[in-house]
Image (tube, rainbow over all chains, first blue to last red; front, side, top):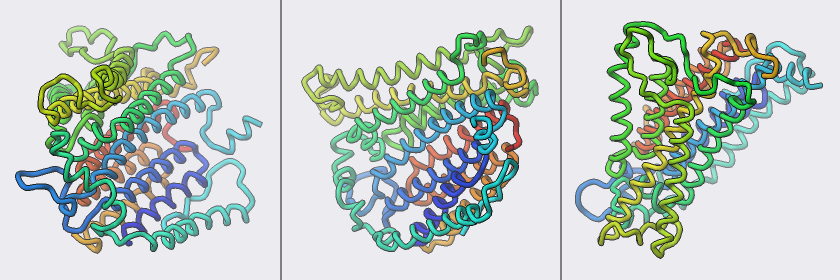
Length: 114
Length: 281
Length: 82
């Protein structure tokens, strides 16, 4: 429960930063924090008491209770790499916005667009 | 909790009431999430629904069916091959999008020359990179190939490979520029076009392996029918390695492509792009 | 390893603090460095949770790549948040 609460706190921090910070780059950092919060939540769902890493060792037939759940691990592994490519795409957009409008502040941008 | 944001700086501010309400919404969200989480199964419970539906099959049969001791690799490249194809396509699309956003417009003659033409110039950095980069690239390939038996695989190896390429760019300058006169720094780095080709080859190889499985009478991405041997687990192991290699190429190419396109403007030694741009950019 | 493990709780607490600091500072390079700290702590916590693959990816991606991308953006947009 404590772990879930920490994931929720990270999520609230990230989504709050996305909504409230005025600078687009900081919004992007906050988005990354939010993504990590979701990943933390999934990895804590995969945890089993008394289990070990999901890599088969020597001998014996594997028992489900002896290994962590590999499915959330797989999903989160791809999610991390997708997150970094979407961050790269967003940074490209920000560079473009900055070179066109000379600011990354949301309010000033809205003023320019008006 | 930790969700009190810093106050907005600069620009006009929203009315006070709205700011207070906005800042209060996120602690409320946190409390709501915590209340909702009391319904979740106990942390670390081996009998939770997430651990009892699909994953026992992956854990108990995975190694025998796919030949990969690392269950994450088995699930990633074999059981959930479709999903991974989608992820690889998303990554490739993000790289393409970044290229289109930043390097399009026809006027950019500096397209293939990415990275900093103006090197950091330090002997320490130069010597350290010469030792580190080959090790990083080799380790990336090791991580890819050994992903069946230890943590690793296409995604991690690809990111490491891309990081090695980026390290070269950072210290030695652009891959396409001629080396400094009198220096024996090799320029075997990829050009921006080379990264794009690498990423495209990766995604095409992924689809190609899937189609090959179809051509030999199976379903798309169901590798059991490929003519690679008689033992089905061994066939799947080899096909999984091919899939991981395809993901490796896609991720490595895209990562280096992202860095290249974002850093094209760095050649002016830190002067932001906005101050030196042409009439149209 | 149970949930009440002090290492896990401590790591999560430091993660939260470093994420908060990364969002609070006014300088992009500092923010990127703090985000790298956050990512490495997260990777350590993943390893503690028995997810070495995820930890490996997070260390490569969050610790190195995201930081590099943010820093190279700082070269093009200026390092102060306006």
